[in-house]
Image (spheres, rainbow, N blue to C red):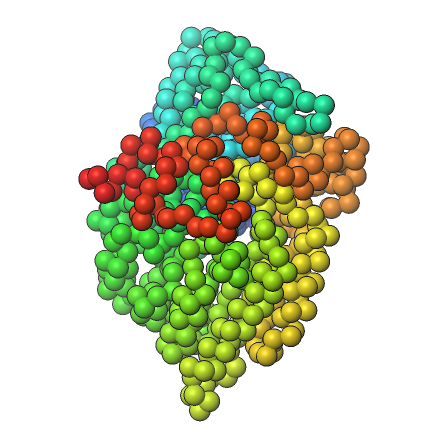
Length: 622
């Protein structure tokens, strides 16, 4: 019988013990005597969030298809268990076998969000794996990181043996084969890492050195040995309908953030919004075949018993066979009590028709993400959405029976003025007016409810705004107060609710989004002082972070509130993500002159993604 790593006494003490016992529906069990490689996938946040992540489900399925490999999972222990594990010296364990992670061959950590970085150090420490790569031996797992934050790996460089740049379906098999061979031949850990560094897409930070100028900018970044590449090339899976996809995804015992079947319909985005890192990193846009998705929907619903299916994509409306797929899902599954969830849809006649079929109009709200309040600023960020489109969509929705609208905006976008900020309030008010104009008083079901939310803009690597200055916390708060005042001046202000985010957390996200290796020491020291679960506001210790920056002689505003010149060496310049620096520069210049550029289906603007040899770049040439 499977023995749990935690005693009943401990499990009864902690909140949600189901986070730690595994054994979920569709969990993979393997005989360890037939296994050569043990891989543990980690999502460095609490179970409920990690279990909702599609990427881990895909990799878990992919690794476990190999007969010689057993992939298991681990998530960050919540603070109550963290305390007990430290007090009782209990090593962190994998959910499947309940074995200590320190006994595995690989620990793969997905890097989705900068505010989870201290949780990574928690996972390493509780696993009793040396936090620094230089202190590890063959007695410890190879620690490998991947995901969007791996595109600027430098703030995490001292803690990882390898970073995987690109999509997991491509070179993992090669890496595992090399690992097996190295162990069989009795090679050293360094010899194995040298071989790994020569697999395209893998970055081994100990083989690279960085030097700095007197002003703190990077002088040079280069390999410290001749047998590793100077540039790391992103890896892309070009055949999405032929690659692995889990038709038996894991089903958790407790409610998680996204408790549903997820169908990833495409990767990439043709829109190219200038603030959006995902839209740049996942180029070129590639679609899965509709027959592949239909078949998958059947299997996944049958194998999980889920009562909801969701489409995953950066911009679902741009999927070529969207109507066929959605009407198929409605016809096949609605009558069987399966809810269909449709995020990322542009509001048009088709979307409203679909939503009226799949949603309870009385309960649901429509979501628009104009991101900016004025047309000028929407052009700057290349949102590709006009005020007329927003108002027409809202009006049609009101006529269709909706009276709740959610609006998402960002504050602090490049070139933003007070007029642009005020535009958020006036646009919210104009949408409310559409309701009162479109619906006669006797037909209204109460007052229209507009919820306008603002987050703060954080410039990210590999976007046209990677050189731009980010606002300070004080400036963010000033903008927030100004907008709050403007909201109250609107005719329909009683129908508008304004929500906002915390400014201090944004500063830290900004530092680690564009940080360099020097910021790793601050991360380590802040963790040692108790910083953990930073993305959870009740645990975020802003004062401790600021104190730690000061102790390390590092000014956080150097990384956030400074415009970079085009000739400055950026910490991620050694990564070839497909989009060229020249393209990003051109887009930034166009942004500064308030001009849009065409989307990928209208005209190719030469971003560089054609070199991957497929996707939307080649549609017209097929």
